[in-house]
Length: 365
Image (cartoon, rainbow, N blue to C red; front, side, top):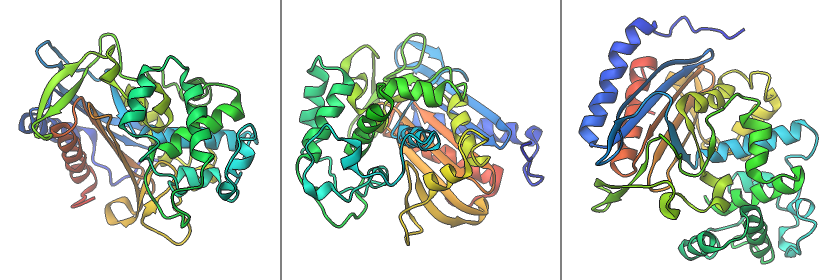
């Protein structure tokens, strides 16, 4: 049974403090919409939303609206791989040469594993692979996203790594190729595997891919070097999101309630869905480096408010901004989202820290 921390403030004390903080950040930033949730081991203990779904059209945002989470998708791709490890379909230390038997890999990849990809320690770089020209061609190409992922894997792994020292270097290409590996293991497109192995079992009914469509908020461009918010972008336009091939690296959307279902796994030792071994793997940086990147999570070794390490990540497709901060030992997570970046990113970051301060007494992240 989930444990309630006796030190946590009662909800009657929390709501009158949290809601004004959200409104203050919304007013100061002038972003269209902003939302937040506080999560403990039992689930969401407070959530709020304010603002409008899109500029010039109005329509208030609601608690059930979907938000694009950008690179926070990476932690979900890694958790999907953990589920495959639990099912004994693969291993964390499996070499890329075993995952891509159909491709001709350069010999230098022989010792690189899936764990190196998921920790951004493979030697891959986005420059020359996942850059503006490639994104434009991927949008224009009629190929299926899974085929495009396979093509990128063949091109990237057919040449030697850009770097041989395996030092951390954040690159979306790592997760695109991890998605291609998942497709080979499961025989499903990454999107279908995410639904089958993660979203549906966790009850994340709102989760989907690309910019949310229908009666939902729209993302907004930044203008004036990111200092103000520009036009709302129709989700049916190609530029409303990165091309689908980038899905494993950052193309999911969902409600904050459903995002909280995922975050709660890291407050409950996996809640019986992920094993303790999986949670340990997903949240452990490379050996000997305390402050580093684990599998889809940045890791800060120790913070008093968290009573231990902190997991954190942000995501943006340049039209939305999503922030997740998790204190596993404290049993606390804060999620914020805005339907703009630039001012929206600063508002989401600031609100997350505001909420940590009133709920956990955190003076800093």
